[in-house]
Each structure stands twice: as C-alpha cells, then as structure tokens.
Image 1 (cartoon, one colour):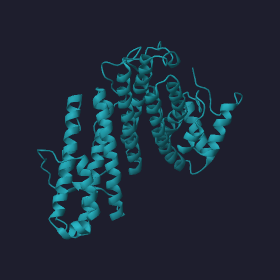
Image 2: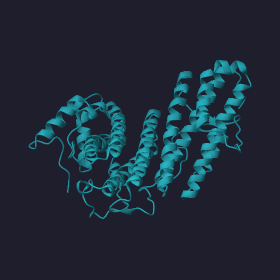
Image 3: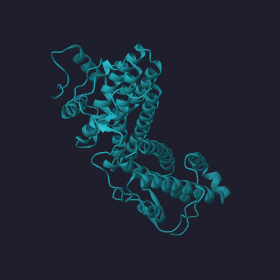
Image 4: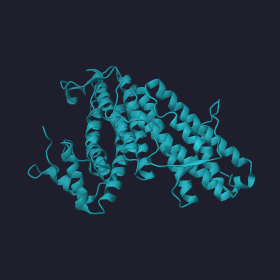
Length: 401
C-alpha cells in the first residue's frame, strides 16, 4: 500500500490502526483470564484488561473525531503478530504472551509517534493524537528490545471472525483453592473474630469477585458483535473486580488466616452462563446479582463496622460504589434493549432472576439510594420496595431449592 501523504488520511489511518491493536490485545487478554490457573496471574490479566479498555475508550474517541468510518484497518504484520499467540496455554506461556502483546503495543505507539515527528506540520495538525499516544506510552512503554513492525504495506480490517484464543466453559482455579463442601458456617457466626472476618473476605474474593472478573472478560469475546462501548464497559468492570479481588486478599492477610480455609464456588459464573443472549446475561449479572449485592454490601459493611473493623467496612463501602457503576452499565444496555418500556424492563429482570433461582430484592434490606445511583428505574424501585414490605405478593419468584 502506498504511503499516505495527506495529513488527514494519515491521521485516520494511524488512529484506526491504534484502535485495532488495542482491541485485539483486549480480546486476547479476555480469553486468557478464565484460562489462567494462578490467582496472581488472573488479577494481573484483569488489571491489564481494564487498562486496555481504558486505552481503547480514549483511542476510539479520537478515531470517531476524525472520521465517521467505523472500519479499523491495521498493517497485516500487526495481525500476524497476534495470530502467533492464538494457541498459547498454561500460565507461564500466557504470562509471556501477555507481556509480549503489551510490549507489542508499546512498540507500535513509539513507532507511530516517531513517524509523526518526522513531519512537524503533521505533528501540529494531529496534536490530539500525539497527546493521546504520549499518555498511552506511559502505560504501554516501548520494551528494551522493540519488536520489528512494518507499519506500511498491506492492511487487514478488524472483523469478528478474526481468530482469538480458545475460551473455556468453566474457569480454572489455583491449586490451593478447593470447592465448597456446603458445610461452611454462616457469616453471622464468623463476624466476631479477626479470623472469621478474614474468612468472610476470602469468601467474597473466591465466590464473587474472581468469577465476576472472569464473567466480564468472557462477555467481551462471547458477545464480540456488540458495539465498542460494550467492550469498554466490560473491561472497566473487569478492572474493578480485579481490584476488589486483590483488596480482599490483602485485607485477609492483614486479619490472619481464614477460619475455615480456602474454599470457592463458581455460582456467579454458572448463573451468568445460563444466560441465552447478551441482554439476559446482563440482567443476570449486572442487574440481579450485582443489584442484590448493592443491598447486601451495605448490610455487611455495617456488620463489620459494628464488630469494630472499620478498615474492612471502608473497603466494602468502596466495593459498593463500584457496584453502583456496574449496575448502571447493565441498566444502560438493558434499558436500550427494552425500548424505554417499563414493563419490558421489569419482565426481563424478573425472567432473569427466575432463570437462576434468585429473588429481587434478596434477603438484605433494599439500599434504595444506592440502587437509584445505579440507574434502576423508579417504577422498578417502587415495586421491589413494596415487595420487600409485603410478604404476600413478592415481586419476583422465590428462590428454587
């Protein structure tokens, strides 16, 4: 392909290629996260997925400022570099491939800037792209041994059919974790001791945050045909869940070893997998499970505070604020799908809860303001608060045994 000389053409080409590179890197990390065994590697991949989503949101904004064309084109050599890592498996190989892809992005950004600096007029005209790439270079630095990338020549267009690593039906877990046996003591009996509170936080990590991180990563590739904004939203939440998982582990260590042990369940993942399409999956995870979590996290934070554990209570309060963002993400997409019909929205949420055997609200008192900040419609809030006050006509079906 002949080198474009028109500054606008070059700006559009470079911006589209940057989006392409970030999006492909995001897809690969989203595939690898559930496949990884090590908890530490999962958290690293979750953080990188979130950082890539943040970078994609900035890069795509610049691309959309330059052109109404939605096609993302990149040098074919860049795509070939990704394809070489499609069949990677095993923690060591995944870690190495992730490092290589992050380095590949760093090389791409550095070379793109170098090309722009060769023409001062273009640098001035395309100043926003230069500022963007300077920002991204801080997060994706050029490696000490840069990759050899040909930025000219034949191009490839991003498509949902491009190869990605094989996804898993059930996420992998670290060897020190063991499945729940069902004989674990209730949290109410654990809250009174540091070891008990460590167990609760480990349960939150192992039962909720770990799977929620994997669910959001898997959503990026399970629903590849959805808009760029959806991928960015899922990557953002993946980053949040990775932070929550890491924070739980850090606080757990501060409190001491868990009273019962390193148990886990896949209930969050299994419920999400029951969804038949993107909207039902969003209803299951972001609206039913995370919506109920808005209620329960406030109750749990109060219990920790009453036990004198102010530090853990503050940690849980931060989780709650993040979950408001997550329910807002779900409400945004589900409301659009429901075409602004209150009844269609309520039906979707009710059916999703019934499908996974949960109720809305759950057992905890409704956190009305938190749910309001999380984007739940007022008619829906009125119904679930009235259902909470009335045991005669519950809004959603009771949980199945």
